[in-house]
Length: 319
Image 1: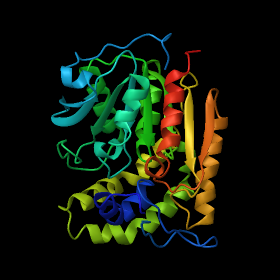
Image 2: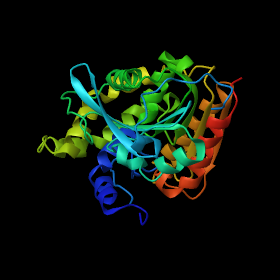
Image 3: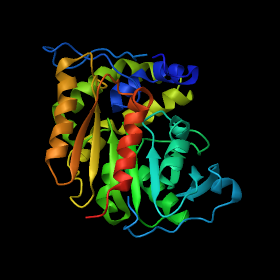
């Protein structure tokens, strides 16, 4: 993709199997419509009326719009949070699988300038400046890291959560457990419970098997480590995820990419779109937006659309 930096291009190529397994960054090549399972993978290239949250004291640099690193300790490991201090409202940007907080670098200053909100990004374990945590990836641990980080940063409410791709799983669990903390959410081509039927889980797991086997030959490579940790818990984790219900009290905008991360398989691409439609129809205060012409990498392909929807959610008065 021409808009990606060399760093991102190499990451997308290396994480093609992870993209398939978790429907994260990058597109995948899945099966033909008549095949029982996909067989191969390849990468493609809130408002003033709401209660104010408390925040860590702003330094002069932060007040000027600079990001400040805060290392949070949770369950024995350190997680890096990057805070651009603002006033009253908080926007949390959560990256897709295989991406660290730098994924949002282009959007953070624009969001801060346009909304005046505190903007927070963070690195999940094994990425960016955060510690590596061995073993299978657990969404419960990821939610715990986000909860602990916001708590230690003094954020108690009025949060707009923005989640891309795999981070949609974290968002669904976080919203279920912390509905009063969220004033709204923008889910950017994010994983949804509605997609992960037993049949779809089997299709995606089968497609990733060759890449998982290859990754086991070099498990210490960070990219392989991410894939293997996700693969180790993939089936039971997504069977559980399929049962998660988004709380009715949390407004949500879902941005679906036109191409979807499964564009090479019409069957799976349509299931991705159907999941988005079903999610939006399953509760109140939910809006579906299509990112026309975009790949799964919507924040890079259509940044202005993502900014518009985040800023619209931040500005929406509480019901």
